[in-house]
Length: 548
Image (cartoon, rainbow, N blue to C red; front, side):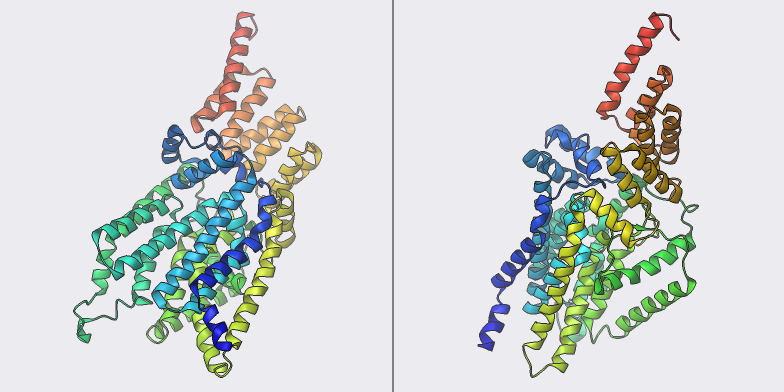
């Protein structure tokens, strides 16, 4: 009986079916959820070209635009296809994210199983990835389509690389290169993948162990392995250049004046350890983690010593426990571009950034845990399975609770306010919800509080300006729109809104300038075009009538 159960657990089809059932059961409720007022408007329901669907012109726009301070045309094409299929029904977008997460989980299992021949270990890594609460943000948040989609291309590239290593051919290599390129055009997180493939050459592929000293004619040196990946590295470098340019154009990269190097370094060291702690104990997860104003030197030193210590242990035991070396440097490497040394946005860290890096830590947990349990529970064959599935079950319950916070914008932001302090994004988010409901006094209070915490928060200034506009406080509105464009000159909405306020005051000439500014930043801005046409008519009409 025991042997039969073990065989079932080692059956590939059974494990894939288990992953499907687990993910669908865990994320089933998201199809009832709406869009959230946290980037979903920018990515979908107020996006000027997504709403036109998947057309030839739109597809060309996807490859040309730097909208959202990113260049990710494949992500845009994916969302355009969703719009064509589901219009603005959020359920369809949610299901697409869930399906990609499902593919990613199964793909992770099949790749690890194919390379290592370890069925239950590979299955446990995939299950941890499938249900971990840190991954909820990437799946339940429609705007993070780029995350689940880029992971799909990441794993596809890894799978194709494995097939290429088994049977090298120029066709297989070129196909792998093409999929890798698609991944880079989805999200630039794939820039680190060539380094991870080098790690996989060490283990589990063990290509570096095939040396000439061992009498193996198929020897592969480290130089050969690096040379083999030169085309991948070249694509990565190109993607990094485009990414930095796009972020700089949109004002997403923050200055050293606002975030000095000592602050960035302290945050990076702390964040590396915080992600590990949240992986082990996923508590107080939020959609946004504010950047701390100060850091405890002792906390940063302890975190730094921890990182150096673990890195040293992994290097010293690289030959004995290869999975330890590979898993740890997978985590360090993949997390590095988003750890905050180049500060993009206001966050100190983000759950979504851990989506791919966690895979490396899961490998350490499972392979290392298996080694420990083999010694402790050797006569009791079922104990490793019982402990493993109990841990997965606990994570599933926590993830299920975390998913419910993505039900609506208000639930999401109020939860973030509860588990963090001075969270200007969450506070402004509640203000925006009151604005949508027409509760202007409450909206103003929350938006003013957000601005008090983060004075250079352009979106909060813009939305506070809208509140004042609706209250007919035109001078206050113009001031807030001016603050918004001061801190973010590319914010087309603020230029347009200022134009509206100026038009309401009868300052048509100044309003026309602001509409032109809005269209300069976003040539496809329909409201700005309509407002410009209307204001030009009013301006010329007044001129003919003899009014200034």
